[in-house]
Amino acid sequence: MEKKIKAYEKFIEEKTSGKLGPIERVKVAEYHKEMVANFQHERLIHLIIMLFFVAVSLVLIGALAWNICEMGLMFEMVAFYFLTALVVVLTAFYIKHYYFLENHIQGLYKYTKKIRLGGDDKEEK
Image 1 (tube, rainbow, N blue to C red):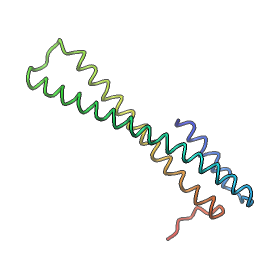
Image 2 (image 1 turned 90 degrees about the vertical axis):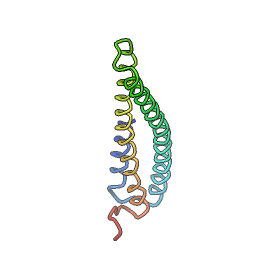
Image 3 (image 1 turned 120 degrees about the vertical axis):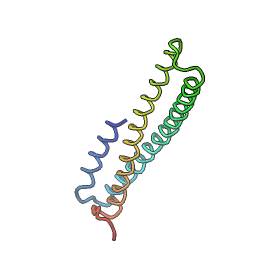
């Protein structure tokens, strides 16, 4: 997904860097709207999955803390310790991935303005 977003950012930057004719502007605007909608859908799915991973991580950490407080560190529970550590690490990577998606999809919104206003991406003050 990261490669797709970066490739699309490069594509749309090239398309909007020059002047667009009226017909080309409409085509680029429609295509951009469709792509942003697709990326937003992908972001929503990843948000739901990330929240699931966070919830599972919190439950496992809570269970691990309760287990350690009640019974102390036990060698028999090494698989549970490993599972908890694995899920926490996966959650950290998922948060990193979602952070990338969120920031880059937010960055695509400037191109919508650039397409509609005709190539100027200067912020209004």
